[in-house]
Amino acid sequence: MKGYVYDEETFVGEISLENGHYIFQYDSTFLENSQNFAISLTLPKRQEPYISENLHPFFSNILAEGNLKKLQCKQLKIDEEDEFTRLLKTAHSDTIGAITVREER
Image 1: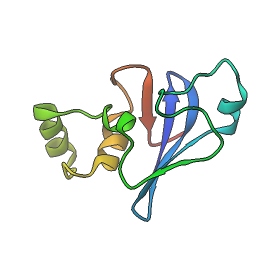
Image 2 (image 1 turned 30 degrees about the vertical axis):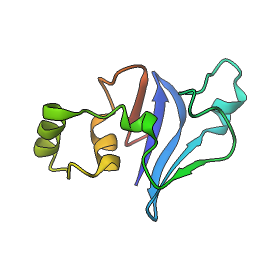
Image 3 (image 1 turned 90 degrees about the vertical axis):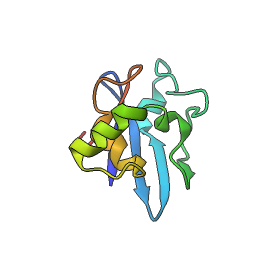
Image 4 (image 1 turned 135 degrees about the vertical axis):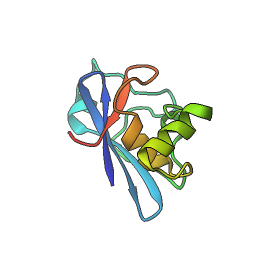
């Protein structure tokens, strides 16, 4: 599974879940443009992918919590513990800040 990360309408990079590891990779075109800033201080711009066994806190913080989380999971039939599917299905619009994650590029 893969998601496409945007800063408003600017394509930033891809996030995926592969073999139990979360991978975020900035797009090379995004990196080349000095006008583009990193999406987070904890995810500075770099060529190498960020690889982790847990969803990076920056992306976790985009997700709804509490009753809204329960409602989204019930309506979309998503396991509440499946952060990656929640990210793909709910972070495409109406997020806190300018960053969204879309299922299609």
